[in-house]
Amino acid sequence: MLDFTGKNVIVTGGSRGIGAATVQMFMQLGANVAYNYNKNYRAAKGLSEKCGRFEGKLFFAECDVSDYQEVQQFVKKVIDQLGRVDILINNAGIWEYGKIEELPVDAWRKTMQTNLDSVYYFSHVIVKHWKEMSASGVIINISSTAGQRGEAFHSHYAATKGGIISFTKSLAAELGPDGIRVNCVAPGWVRTDMS
Image (cartoon, rainbow, N blue to C red; front, side, top):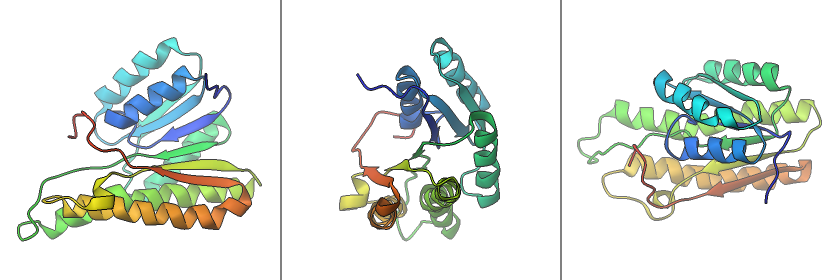
């Protein structure tokens, strides 16, 4: 069995869906976990209560992942609570229906900011933290099969997930020599409240 005792993990979008399952898995494996929620405090608190039976430390806070300043503040809070970050799971995302000719510009931008910009924001801040500490680390980005094959009526979502795949490949090549591993997972359909 895997053992993450003493490892400190951030899971973005950790209060629901794949993120919540990831938080629970890392807690079960002994890690200390920090996760954010954007609007649903009740879901975030409920997850915290579910994870109360595990031994690791658990921290959650509100953070709009599409806002760089909020990301910086969230990461600072996590480091203040846990001391460092070992693993970053970039999971936060939104998925909305939209025919291209009817898709509002605001919906396109919101999807880009939440799904793709946030991956850059968290990676930027965490990698800087690791390099300042001369530390290694792991980034796991959650993409989607939509990023590999496209998806009708979800072009904005698919574009972000394809961008995450390319971003991951680029960072893996760039950061590997520094002992920082960067990988991507591209799940297909998963039954969550988002799907």
